[in-house]
Image (cartoon, rainbow, N blue to C red; front, side):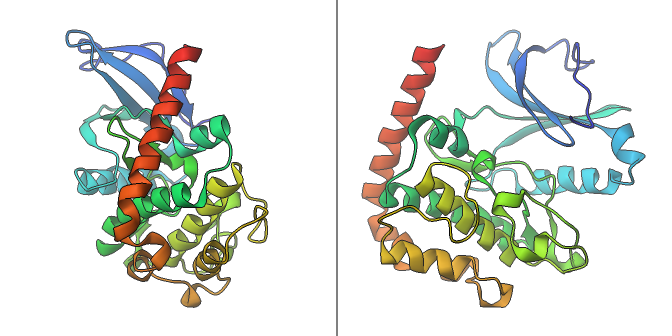
Length: 281
């Protein structure tokens, strides 16, 4: 159940320009729709967030922070592209590029990835996180469903509902349990950028397992020592002993010189995923 109720129709000024096509996803605070421009027929994702139910739960400042952070990061590599923000007296409407799929959906369709393929996607996610961390922002809800794939086959990070600025000494239970580090599962513990590093490690687990991991020791059979080493460095229980994002990008498993072969594999994977989607439609 979402705090934002489903819409029967878009309000003006959006109604005159876009048609509601379908619901793409329902989250705790928002509903995401696919909309289509009435004249150009171009399709977009529209994230809708209702103000009043958030306000009465003393969460309006979090909602405003999300909108502010998304606007700041729009245009950054590997961050989903925001085209327009519309505010009414009751709602925020955020119009984004419409991505083809998520890495969670891809794993559901195709099962576990090879290590090479998983490292390639992880590197792209790390590049998106680096943009955030370099600007003092912690995402706090990195997971495969928030790693979208755009029309060019590039990973784009989305959903900044839990995001905040590290200087604010962020606390509280945040994120999604399968991907959350110990300090994000307890009240009162300060959360740093290392929260996202742990979640990236859990995403790597998901890519290699083809499903949500059941804990740090839930690993596929036949995992290489290189993959184990990387996850151990990312998912240390002590946040101070985890790699930071720059150190992570320097790990040999994510070395840039290997990216050509990784990108080829990813391109093939995306075409398979899109072919399946088209055939199912």
